[in-house]
Length: 407
Image (cartoon, rainbow, N blue to C red):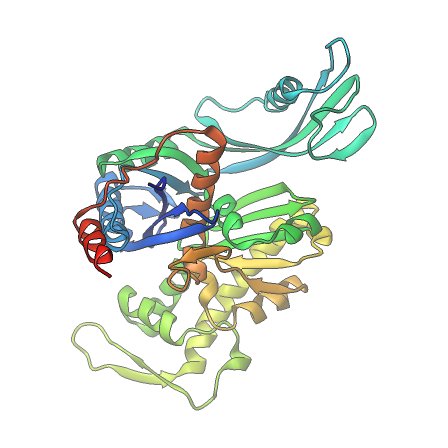
C-alpha cells in the first residue's frame, strides 16, 4: 500500500488539501483534492483558531471523499509578513587525517552558517544551502568526497514568528490531524511549478495569494532571496467592492468572471452585471470600468514586487525571467501587466510532473497544495519514515475496491 501524503495550503481566502502518493512508476499521483473557504486568517496569519480548524476539516474531508482514503497527518504551508529570509555563511576546518570532506563536515559547516542571532520570539524554519567553497574553489553543490583544508557554506535562512507557527499547529491539531512539517509557501510552490533549468539560469517565483504576495529568487539552483509582501488578491476584491458599491462576495464573483488587469485586452462594448446592496436593483456597466479599478491595484502589487527584486540586487541575474503563480495570477491580462512592470519574460506557473487528477489541479491556485504534496513525498523518502497517514480506505475507498474487483 502506498504512503499517503497530504499537502495542506491554509490561505487567507481558501484552504486547500491535496492527497497523493508516489506510485509504482515513481510518479507523483494526485488522488484527491478538497477546497473550503478560509474564515480565520488575515494576511496569511491566523486570527481565529476555531474557524481555521473548521476550514481544515472541510477541505480534508472533501479530499478524503475524492481519494477514498482517511488521513491523520499533513504537511502545512505558511506565509505572512512575519516571515523573513537572510543569507549567511559558515566556515569550518577539515580536521580529519586525510583531509577528505564527509557528511560530518557538511553538517558542521551548515550548523556554523545558521549560528545567527535571532530574537527570542522567532525560530528558524528552513536552512537552504546555496553552494559550498572548498579552499578557493567556489560554486560546489556537493563537496562530499573532495579534499581540502577549509570548507565554506553559503545558506539562505528563513525565520518566522514562533506564535504564528504555533497557532498554525494548534489549528491543525484542533481539526484532528498531526502536522508533519511546516513549510514556507513559495518553496512548496516552486517544487510544483519551476523547472530545474529555470532555477539554474535564475528565476523569480511570485506567488500571489489572497492576503500576501510571496517572492523567492533562485540563482544557480539555490534560493538567493525571499520576501513576503502584505498585499494580495483580496485587496483587488476590496477595491471592486468599494468602486462598484457591491458586496465582497459579489465583488469576488465579478473579479473571477470578468476581471482583467490590462485595459487594452477589453472590448469597449462589453458589459458586466453588478449586483447591488440593500435590495436595490442590479446594474450594468462597461467591463472597461471594472478593468480601470483592477489595473492600478495589479500594477501597484507588481511595482512592489519589482522594488523588492531591485532591493535584492538579483533582478539583473534573472535570465529565466518571472514565474507568476497562486490564485491571484489567474486574472486575465496578468502576464501583460507584469511584463510591462518587470520588463522581462513572464509566464504563469501551473503544477507539472504529476499524474492522476492532474487536470483538476492544473491551475495556479493549486500550486502550493501540490508543492506541499511533492515536498512531503521527498521528505518521506529522505527520512525513511513510515506512513504519513492511515492508508486504510474509508467507506468510499472500500466500495471502490469492491467494484474494481469485478471490473
